[in-house]
Image 1 (tube, rainbow, N blue to C red):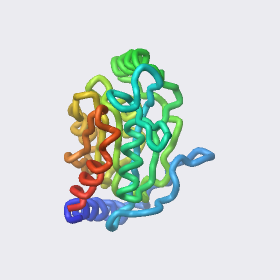
Image 2: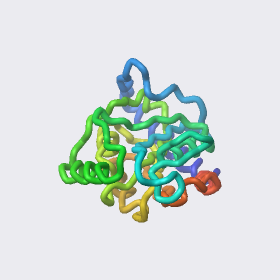
Image 3: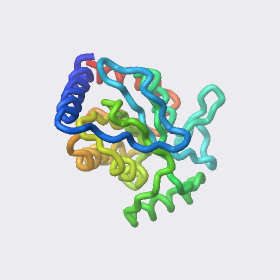
Image 4: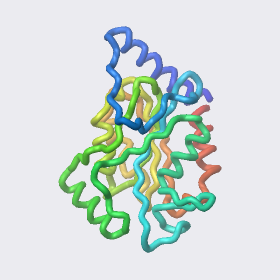
Length: 224
């Protein structure tokens, strides 16, 4: 637990100092049906939130090799959605899914083309879900696919929509061979006042169905 507890304690102290020097942040407005519940569990002295963006394709590939989805107990889940659920099991944190007002194609080639065009335009798609009470969380696990060797544009929108100062951000990704592709450094540049953990979890999409033990070991490693 020492490594993660140290990070969390540092984030907590920074958050406490910031709170002493101001009147405190206003609550982030929520939709009529909030997408995230009040914190239900914590790791050490810190509340944990698991945020993810995941688009599940429904064509052309099975749920084992090279797929964007995985079958779990008969339920289909997007790759990053599944990893987020495993992290929740290990940490007891809350889940929040990044969703956009626009709909993404769910077939492979149109999705690739759409993501490529969105990246070329450096777009910032409007979000359909809003995060309540970010100030209640100290550690944010952030999961996303790698699109064109970059973060999805929706993740840019998310990171630019909230103040993560004093928070600890722990990245994870499911990829097609690129690893993180420099996105951890991108997150650190977008959030210079947050602690961005470099030891993120990078999983090949070919191995998603067999990663539960890897996720457990990774989370335990963060806790040392």
